[in-house]
Structure formats: C-alpha cells, structure tokens
Length: 472
Image (cartoon, rainbow, N blue to C red):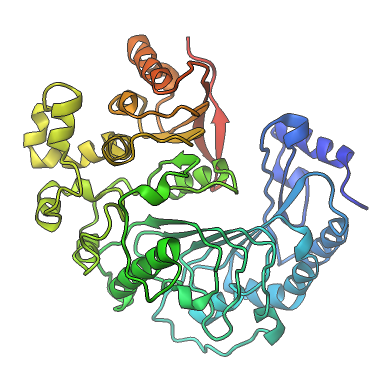
C-alpha cells in the first residue's frame, strides 16, 4: 500500500489527538511533514523494536515508500541494546539500503556501549538528504572489533545528501564515503564523549560552504578519554576553515574578517543543550547557512584549543570564549573579542555591579549568549544586507537581550522566530516585551516583521518547538 494523502491526514489526526505512539504504528520510527496541508512541520517518530516483529513490519514499511508521496519521509532507528545490532545488520539494514533513495531524512542511534568499529561501519550507509547520527561509545572496550558488515555497505556515494549532521561519530577512514553535494556540515559532541573527529580527509565534500561546531569539551574522565582528542579538535578546526574559505589545503587560512559571511541569509543562535541543538536544526532551511551553534557554559578544557597556532587568524570558533573574562584577555591580545564589561557600559549605560564578582560570570554568559553574537555582528558585520530570517533561543524569558539589535542594518529581515527554554515569553513584563520587539522592527527598513514564538518541550527524549500563545 502506497503512502497516500489520506494516510498522512489520518496519522496527523492521531498526532493532534495525542494518541499513544503505539496506537499508530508497531514498526519503524517514522516522521512525515505535511507543509502543504498543515503549513507546519509535524514530526512523528516511532522506535524500532527489534525484539518483536519489527523486521517484518519494517519490510512492509519499506515497500510502502517505494513510491513516495508529496511529503517527505524520515526514518529514525533506535537500537536499545547491544543484542539488537546483529538483527538490525542482517535484516533491517539491507531493507533500508534498498529504499534509501526514497527517504528524505535518516537518523540512527546505536547503543552506548557499541564499540567504535561497529559505529564507523554504520557511518557509510547511504542517505539522500540529511544524515544524522546520535552515537556514543566507550573507547576502552575489550570486545572484539571484527568487521561484521558487508563491504558494499561502505560504498555509498550519497548523491542527494546536502546536509550532514554528525554527533559523537567518526567517518570510516578505511572506505571513506564521498559527499559530493554536501553544502553544510555540523559536528556535535556531548559532555565526556570523545569520539575521534571526522576530519575532512575521511570524506570528500567539494561543495561545502557552511560549517557548525557544537559541543562541550570537558576535562578527561578516567577510562573514557581519547588522548588525541584535543589535537584532533585543533586539526579539525584548521582543516574546516581551509575547506570553507580557501577550498585548497595549501592556501593559508585567512579567517575571518567576516567578509565571507556577507551572503549569509539565515542567522541561528543556540547553546550546547542537545534538545536545543535538535530543535534548532529543524528550524534552519536546508539551503541556507547555519552560522554557529553555541555552548552556553565555559569549559576549562577548551582553553588549550584556543591557544593553538590558529590564534589571531579567526575571531570566533566557539561563541563562548568571552565567558572566560580573565583567561580570554590573555589569549586574544588584538581585541578579537569584546569584554562583557564593555558590553554593559556601551549598551546599558553603566556596567552591572555584579560583573565585579567572578562567581557571576557564568550567569553573564547565559544572559548574553545572544547579545555576544549581535554585538560582534554590529562591530564587524554591519550591515547584514541579506539576512531574511533569524532564529533565536532564549534561556529564560527575563533574560532576553535588548542590546545591539538596533545597531545592525538588516533591510531584508522579515521573519523572526523565538524558541524559549524555561519560562514562557508571554510571562515577560509588557514594557520589556514591547521594547524588545520595537528594537527588532527598527532594525529593518519596514516594520512588517513576521514574529513567531515557540516553547521548547522535550517529549519521550525528543524535542519539539511548540508555538506559544500570543502575548497579551
């Protein structure tokens, strides 16, 4: 049975009625988007249960998507335990590979204790548009690392893939896949997860023009730390910058001066929380560049990265280096970054008295996670002639930054999307709220901004942006 509009509408009604996931399907974790019918992205996920009838159900599902409808199809596979890996490899994976050209988005999550070779093997499965992996591993495993995958699974060239999302995963170096049409790549790393980084040598990405790095790099934990991790981070950063701006390895990196970003059409800011990162990825159009994903807390282990020979050649690697007020002042001697004390003095009229207290620095970082971006843009990137839409996350409604927006000229700005984490934006005092949006409207030539507000909610481990009610 082919997927039809009636089936899509039926599933959407079940979602709207908040029916149990088990009432809808018993096979694969699937999402479909009905942009034309609902004018919004409705994601529906289902977990694969390989211990029951999942292989047969998934085969039936695969047959259904051989002829796709007018909406996109996404498949998400979650393997809950190590004993699920072999059934997935032998039964499910060949089915998925056979219909992969009919799937728009493919996400695979492996068990936390799955060994490294096994994870790298999964990384070469072909996918059409978005390739997202939610993988973790423990590097000091004593299990055998025999290659149990068929060689032809490593040969995917991913001809339709344009957006590559990697999380705690390394690309296979033995048979590297070719991502010939990838234009945007994002690397995500969680606390304490030190998977080897997918260096550019591991995959050919000749068309890449957008790079984002997100994650928290913590001090080593006993038995869970790869000694080469810090060095890989520095090498990855250098190589990515060469690919992004110079295209050839032998050309010295001349980053940033901000000029290469004047064609930017979409600004997106966020932090290191996995649920926020996932929500932000869903909000960014595939044909536009995601500027940076940001972490919202200082990590001491990141400082050695910033002391690399790249210092002085780029102005932003992770947007949180201003958080280390004392340390950053010794690392960057050429006013590459703006001190928070200057930020408050310039934009609010007087510095916050708590800035003199070092214990307050963490809160300052959270408060200004958006302000730091806007201030740097105002100082180095003014104007932003091509920005059409902005996606902002707000940690707390009472901490919405008001600074620097009025200093940036964005004549094409027409759409602003807010994602609140924590308190709802409608709980902000009316004067605070109105002043914020008046500044936004003044930053564009016309005050006809389309403003949407969403509250980030996490349901069953996944994240979703739920539209907030209109403010009073």
